[in-house]
Length: 175
Image (cartoon, rainbow, N blue to C red):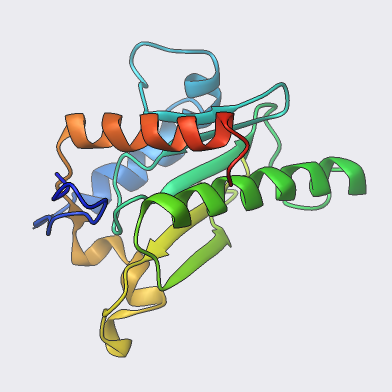
């Protein structure tokens, strides 16, 4: 839900079962490969894709507009499995998607991080998380990304609308 100005309404936080989330990330098939393959059991709101990369809204966002960017091919090391040209091509996608997010979502600071583990969520990916203006300093940085504090309850129609706006910005060359 946004108020028509592009600013997101306040979303309530819901607890997340981190034990189940962690178990699934370790035991289930690669969630990014499933998204790339269009597995009907792993539907996410796509923001961008080309022959090398895919970007989609985080299904468990701690911040409104939180997006993941990943190579389409299953790679597990952020630098070791990419040539310099492949890595820089992904960074260009991250920059474009980040600028589209900043254009659509009020953002004081865009956090960009590669998270994951060889023990779960192995497919390398980058997190693009827009910190909204006015968040007290004590709730910024790692606290803003901490799923233990709950995830935003963003209605699916709002996620779909945001994804469509981001796709339009990216298709128009903005971002």
